[in-house]
Image (tube, rainbow, N blue to C red; front, side):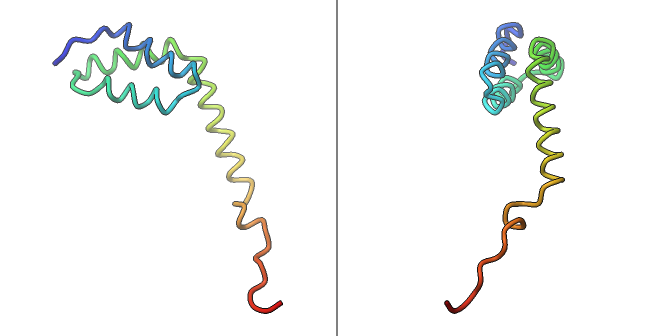
Length: 88
């Protein structure tokens, strides 16, 4: 297994989160996990979660708001009346 500088790797992921690029951060974290032992993967996860606690909490809140809003509001197709079919 290749050696990893966990500190530097965590900083890469945190930097992406701080740039509001959660998808890229998740992809980078996944790539960094590849070929690493569970111990290294978990250490990296802890570093990232500790350093990016604020950003991760903001993502959790955004996800929760999205779920609450989605459950309370019908989908746009359900809100609009269906167009009349047929003639003029």
